[in-house]
Image 1 (cartoon, rainbow, N blue to C red):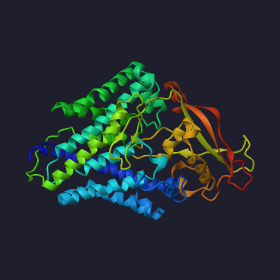
Image 2 (spheres, rainbow, N blue to C red):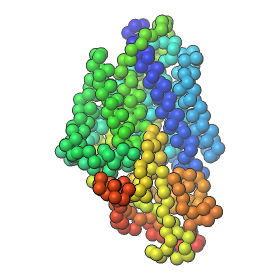
Image 3 (cartoon, helix red, strand yellow):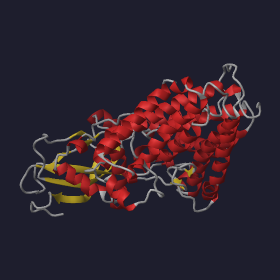
Image 4 (tube, rainbow, N blue to C red):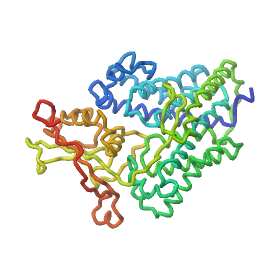
Length: 473
């Protein structure tokens, strides 16, 4: 069936699938290395507490059937193994039906994680990975040419990612319409990267050009994804360049990389396809049925996207098959950071020997230059950024985080860059203070060697001890 497949996209599919497998590998690795402190049986937001109150139908997950830290670890590392196998091209060694099933394995495993991940997994790129991963399962393998309908559905996802983000900006913060948001964004974004300081100090006219170019890329270029070639390839290439620019400017987990993966569906790479037989009838029927389902489920995301009350990053079905996306509808003008400190002193006076905990990604020591972590996702560091915006974002997890620090909990300390206390000597008290951070100027950087300048604002959490030790909770 020539109408059903697109042999010209053979190489594009190959690159897309391998790149997606790499993103899956990072996502499962992130889960495997961080879950105990965040979601484990003694974690800050334990999975068993969630599954006890949320039914399976609302959040389908393997962990409704059984949960233990060991079982979660097995699932996470199994996801890593399957992703590595897909990265190596094992799906091409299987029959077509086997390749489809193999691609559905990481999707099902990661869906199980996201649906019990609570606030740690509330980011838009989680749903985006699931939606893209589900579609990729029906791209086929070496036994068949890429189906046209799946390629267009992938472009449909990319369109909603970019166009939705563009609309939320125009409807949101006035600085997007005034072209001034990048006066602040590089300094106040959740997790700056090693080049963010330099991006922040670019001339303001260039910042205005960046914002204008962003509007074009997100509101005009996505429409061209559905144009004939080579226009669609040019649009995809422009989106890829834009995403690489964002990769350089900050740490946004795998958001930029999964967007690049989606753009490959419209980028026709040169290369001849090997001769393959027509798609079997069952595969054609399956792909068309999946396409019909996804188009039906697109109603609510599209309605949200065109609504004046558009919301960002929401799933409308428990399987995360079709979602709505968007980012930075508002931009902070001032950066605040929660600095967490502990002391061994018996009395938590102001002149006590307070020592600061250092995080891996979020700003702390003004002399510590930001590092590049993306596409790896430092979940605690990201939530600390939200906690600094308002204590309401800290919810229940922040208090439990402090408790784990008071216990010198090994799994929690592994989430940090450095604890100021030896493993066998936990602090007597822990406190948190709110500081205002700003990037230093060129002159200040030369004179002090510090990339940040910080100013004390107020107490965030008073000195706290473990219950039963005469503490103030």
